[in-house]
Image 1 (cartoon, helix red, strand yellow):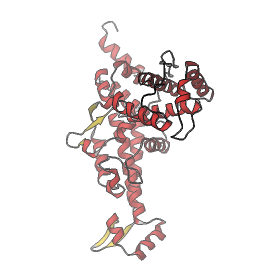
Image 2 (cartoon, rainbow, N blue to C red):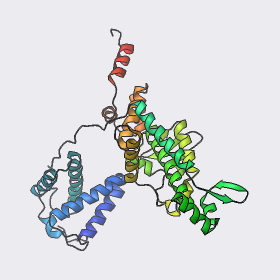
Image 3 (cartoon, rainbow, N blue to C red):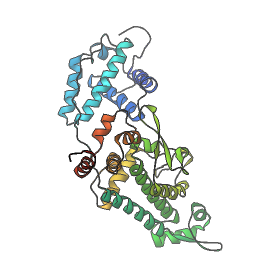
Image 4 (cartoon, rainbow, N blue to C red):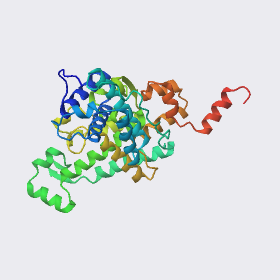
Length: 358
């Protein structure tokens, strides 16, 4: 390793690696976090302690291809998925190239490292009827949550409790409502808002086919409500415009009408926020989708499954592959081809229509 100024500790190396990934490689935020964590895991495997001030020189000086293969073999023995091992292989190859260029290691030790092919399985997709059932069930739960909101007395008659009304109601009145309904008016309003948010994000996921990270990164300003389009920032900071339909539009309007019930100032302009008032994160979205599928009685799937379902249904409806590629934000048409589940019936219909000797 060079004696020139450079990262000498675990903390300094992590910061430099993060800075390189964020500024030079144009990777998504999720990939950057994963690559930083992967290199951290490699350092631990090499015997570097977890303290940020732990020196890294000895471990990097002795790093060789056998170490990297042993690291990957340990993950495989522990049951890590092939896709995870493939990603970690890519991360360490990128790290090795960067470290060699910056004189942190004497040779690019990962240059000959091969990673296993990720399994070619695609997530299950819903039929159009199942997708309709999923979305209808979410909308119905939002309606039921709204019907259960505890009313409070206000000047001029009986009104549904809002955050402001609930605060101005007397403490005794609020206590009586909470005791009778086992929840305060604010609780009912929050539950209604969450149910409307869930219905809206399910509609948007299915209507647009956006990635879960793209959904969580959306701001209200990204909505063109008159044209019913979303401005989406995808992988590699590539921006695209995605249309959405009337049902998704109505679900978004319903959610935006109650968003302020749970949104805090820290959420900024985030389109979707969590129960703690901040921007919604991908893990919470996955929980919402899995729970919604279970409650609707449709096959279990995550946000990525909804993305596949949307792409497949658009293609089955007659869209050409190039249009679906643009919708999904794929850089390669080959990726789109692998991504879609075209039914045998659809293929037979296209063949019968297009081939003269069908």
